[in-house]
Length: 449
Ligand SMILES: *[C@@H]1O[C@H](CO)[C@@H](O)[C@H](O)[C@H]1NC(C)=O
Ligand SMILES: *[C@@H]1O[C@H](CO)[C@@H](O)[C@H](O)[C@H]1NC(C)=O
Ligand SMILES: *[C@@H]1O[C@H](CO)[C@@H](O)[C@H](O)[C@H]1NC(C)=O
Ligand SMILES: *[C@@H]1O[C@H](CO)[C@@H](O)[C@H](O)[C@H]1NC(C)=O
Image (cartoon, rainbow, N blue to C red; front, side, top):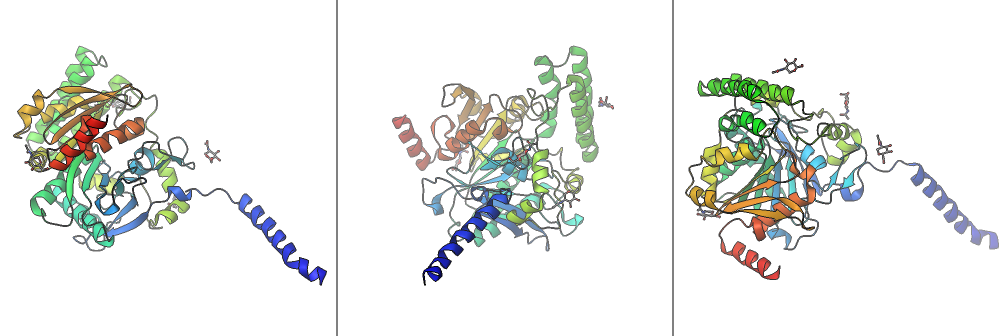
C-alpha cells in the first residue's frame, strides 16, 4: 500500500524533471509570444483574381479609447517593391532586429502603443504578397490604389468592430506616391465607403520627383559635400533626367535619376545617401535573413513557397515608368479634405527636408500662403533635447526630424512615435486639423501641460 501510494508522486517528479530538461534543451523561440502579430496572413485582391496582399496586424498595446474607436495606422513601404516587413521589423513595429537577425528586441518607440498598426506588403508581388502573374502587378498609381482599397476593405470586413475605426495611411520613401494615391482614391471615388480615412502621413517621400531631383546639387553643395565643379556635373545629370521626364520618356527618366544618385554617392563617398551620419548602410539585410527562416514564415502565416526579397525586381520593373510621375495634385486634393503630415529625417540626401519643401511651396492649395507664413517651431523631446522642427497650418503639418535619416523610426524611435501620436490625436505642436474633437483634445492637452 505504501509503495503504491508513492508511485504517482514519483511519476510526477520524474515527468517534471523530463519536461524541464526538454524545455531547457529547446532553443528559445525566434518570436517570443509578445512579438507575434495579433493577426497576419493574406487579403485577396479582388481586381486581380488569384492575387493577395500579405499583412501583419498589431493591436494597440495600451489603447486609451474603446477598440472600435481606436485609430488604425496603415504602413506602406517604398521601393517600389520593398516589403513593409522592413518597417515592421526594422523601423516602427513592436519588435525589431536592429543588430541581430535571430534576436528580436522590443521597440521602445513602437507605433502601436495607442493605435492599431497594419503593415501591408504592397503592391502585389512585394515581400510575401502574391501576384497571380507579372501582368497583374500595378503599373500606375490608379491600379496601386484599387488594389490597396480592395485589401483594406477586406481587412475591415474580416474584423468585426473595425468598421468605424479612424484610418491613417502612413508610409515612407516611394510610398510618397502610394499614400497620396490611396488617399485620393478613397476621398474621390469612395467617400462613403468602408475606409474611414482621417489622415495621410508621408516620411521622406518621393511625391513630385521632377522638382525633388533638382535639389540634389544645391543641397549637396551647400552642405559642403561637393565643390562647385561637382555641383555643375550634378546639375547636368539632374537636367538629363528632367528633360526625359518632360519628353514623357518616363523609364529613361527613371534610369537617369538612378545615374544621378550613383554620381552623388560616388562624389560624396558616403556609406549611404539615406543617412549622411552612418558609417554603414541601414541593416535591412537582417530582416531579409529573419524572413528567410521557415519558422518566421510559419508564425507569420506567410506562404511557404514565396521567396522573400527585400525589394522585388518584378515590381520595380512594372513601376519603372511611374517613378518620375508626380502625384502632387493628389496631395492638393487631399489637403482640402483631410489631414496631411509630411515628415523628413534631416540626414537624408535622397528625399530629405529641402527636397520636400521645394514641391510643397508649389502646391495649388487654398491654405498654402498661410502655411508658408506659419511659424516653424522648435520641437524638444522628453529630456528637453532638440527633436526637430514643426510647421503647421490648417490641414498640413510638416516635421523635420533631427538626428534621423531616411528611416526615421529606426533612427529616432521614440521621437517618431511621439510625432505620430501627437499628430493623430491633435496634441501640442503636432495638432493637425481644425475639427472640434481635435480642438478639444489639444486644448485639454495644453491646459494639462
Ligand atoms: C544573435 O542572437 C542569438 C540569440 O541571442 C545569439 O545566440 C547569437 O550568437 C547572436 N549572433 C550574433 C552574430 O551576434
Ligand atoms: C561610380 O563609381 C563606380 C565605381 O568606381 C563606377 O563604376 C561608376 O561608373 C560610377 N558611376 C557614376 C555615375 O559616376
Ligand atoms: C532562404 O534563402 C535560400 C537562398 O536564397 C533559399 O534557397 C531558401 O529557400 C530560403 N528559405 C526560405 C524558408 O525562404
Ligand atoms: C481640412 O480638412 C477638413 C476635414 O478634416 C475639411 O473639412 C476642411 O475643409 C479642410 N480645410 C482646408 C482649408 O482645406
